[in-house]
Length: 258
Image (cartoon, rainbow, N blue to C red; front, side):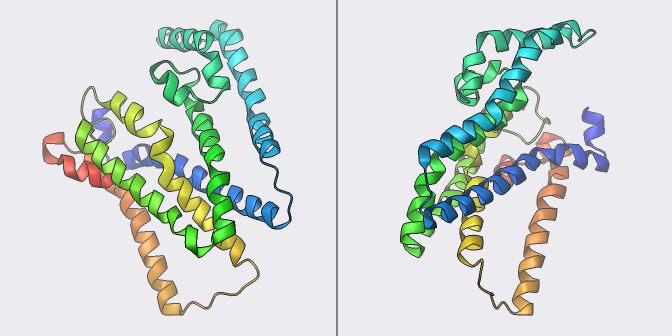
């Protein structure tokens, strides 16, 4: 694994940790847009929204969990059997935290279907969103500044936590891969930046949906260059952390995460 990480093609795998943020942004854009439309048309019903969101994917998750603790145990053999048994035991013990979408906080080290942490984070972010969207709709520019502020504070939090816990990027430092996931990857509050950027975008898409924005070609080009440069820097920059850890400072790690 370490040998592979030194190869340039390893970026395709190691930078995949950012893919989940694109889904969070898309989800919050759509949520912001649809909620603002409902508020304008006086069709906003918060209990129905929450129930609808919960029922959209929780029954499917329950079906997956049932399959995992029943038929799946008879399908897996070989060197991963012990790991599979561990996940099955976690599902049988903590099935309730999975269905309540709180397992990324309650029993992080014993998650049932670990990849379903995303559903927990997504649902928790969904629950806090109507409050912010409502006040953005009601007060407009007087309140909308809180969206980028929360995103900025989230980025600062990631920098500080990385420095405090001395977390190194990806899997370079032995024994800290777990810290990366438990402290920086699974918790919902570490995803606030992506979610609030999405809500901010959704607000402007809704507000200017019937208006034409006049942006000069020069400014347009500058913004595209900045956006693409940051995108490339994030994806390719992770290659720097394939170096031996003594060559990469902790501050570099923290700034990269932020």
